[in-house]
Length: 136
Image (cartoon, rainbow, N blue to C red):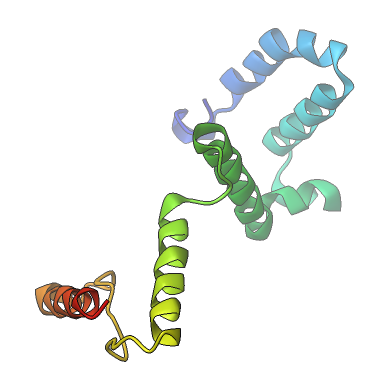
C-alpha cells in the first residue's frame, strides 16, 4: 500500500492497520508490539525515531532480515537452508579437490563461465571438463 501510493500518502496503510489489524493486536502481545513499531515507522520521520526503531531502517538490519526470509522460504519450499546453486558449487569444489588428491590430471583453473567471460571461456571450460572426465 505504501509503495503503491502516490506522493507517499500513508492514509490507506494507517486505515488498514486500524481497521483490519488492531483486533488481532489486542489478542496477541507480540503482534501488538510489531504493529506499534510499524505504525511508528510510518508516522514519524527517521530523525525522530528512538534508537530501537531507527535500527530497523539501517541497511545491515534489512540485509539480515532478507537473508532470514530467504532461508525460511528455501527451507519451506525445499527443506534446505541454502540455495541449490550454493550446494552445487560446494559439490563441484569437493569433486575437484578429490580429483586433485587422487592425482587426476586437471587444468590448474577451471572457469565456470559465470563472469561474462564469453563463449571462449565456456568452450575452454567444457573442453577442460571433458578432458578431466576422460582421465577418470
